[in-house]
Image (cartoon, rainbow, N blue to C red; front, side, top):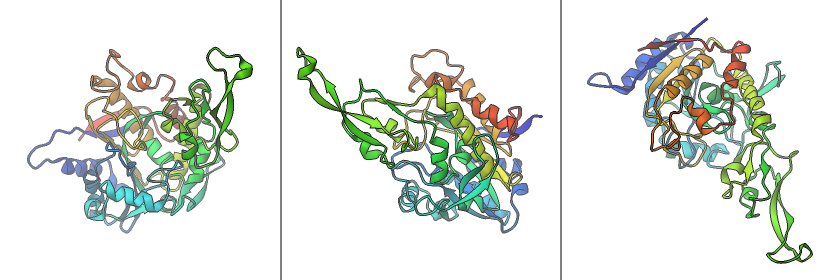
Length: 383
């Protein structure tokens, strides 16, 4: 059975500004059925890493908050801490980054709460009894909220092909322990040929899983017996949390993920965490995806590359599978921008595959539909 995905384009005019259209979209998608008076409503966003500029602009989040307030709800803006070290790895730095990026109370109209507390350990265990997990660990503020509104920036992603409603809720609602559980099978590997032993990855590994070990390198014109000693990084697979931070920071691109073996499992785990985050509020959740500044990588990077397609619009649905499927289709229908990383690649009917050819991004949608999280069949209704 097809689910309804509501959509509004970005055309505006007098008495029809984008904030006005966002309010209309939220109401059309059934926000008044999601929340009640005095409902503690988690508005799940991504505050953006410091230096990133692709995240949803705070002034576009305010219209949704205003509708929630008009409906008598008690909204709060929330996100959980990151597994990797950066500007959002603890609540103090996270809140400072959020405010620096414009998420201040006078702008968004609601308080900011880091869902998993000061150090990522404020969590609730949720029983799911699924293929990969019996229980999942969700940030307490989200787990204990009466209702949830996901506001996701739809973009491409280096581990799941794209990030939308599923990633915003499944990964974004998890505590640090929950993030580790999802990433734990995605163990980076070091290419000894590329690694120069600079130690950048060592400094960034919060798990202490990386060490520098000696590697014998024969000097030019010398015998192996007269080899000089060089250093190379080594990752302890038992200690590695799979956060992929080392992959991001390596200046030599010497660290990579075992794409074929691990990523389908990673996406399935993310879907199971989405189910856990929504447990108890399956009928009290709304998903809104912003198809704007569609960057080729996650907003967790401290930068944002040029968008791969032009801005498209905003979608909303009570079905997280349908909205992500619709947004992927909308992106793939657009011509790619020659100013993006897809320059010179010719026609790209699948933008996610063009950027990340090793990722079967549909796996998260297939698995989610199999578990009853939603439907890949949808009807697009323009508002």
